[in-house]
Image (tube, rainbow, N blue to C red; front, side, top):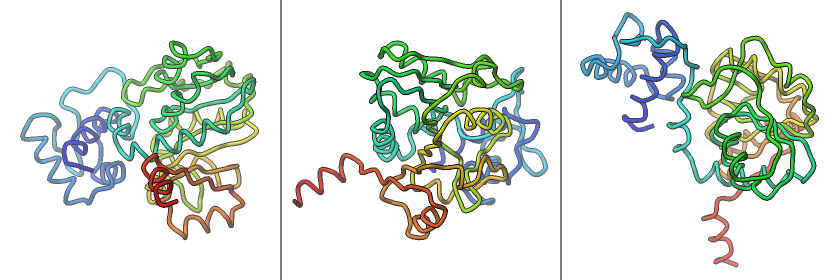
Length: 268
């Protein structure tokens, strides 16, 4: 992650809690402790965060708390070609007439461009996904009640959702903070609570995760690998991660980027 991106993530993170610790910031940026401490010092000098013992806090804390994790605007620029390929492969699993759930995220958001000609019932907690499908498709769009978290572009409620509890889906498409032998990991308890209320409503859980997510880690586990029907990722997946999914009985779908597909056609 470049310095400018790290700084944006740090500024967003300090808005989400009283103090964002150095360890928290290392986790969400994938950077070393030394790098984060330098970033905090630089942002403190510029007056964008306040340096405190063990981390940083907001100069002007917001009235509404934010969620832990990178903002949507930062995440959507990372590994974008891989995310587009993964989303294209995910959309290919969808069929007209089927009810589906699309969880909020930058990879799942890329699915919308391939769903404009579909006729499905789509439940989503993503304000961005709902808005796009409403204006660019004839899909039926259902959203939960709750608060719009602008940084992550999702709608969440601490009280659960009546609509979600009565929505059946053939498949649920979901991203993640990380994926490993213990299962899917997320960065914020609020997101975990919301997603737990949704995954039980779908027959199949389809995970959209670029290969970098197999190195991502968090202290919050959403569900085990045994709950996942399939993982869609890119060609950068390591052999040990392939083996992990195979051992757990999870179907693996490797999506090719446009450049990779064109290269193979040229060779052929």
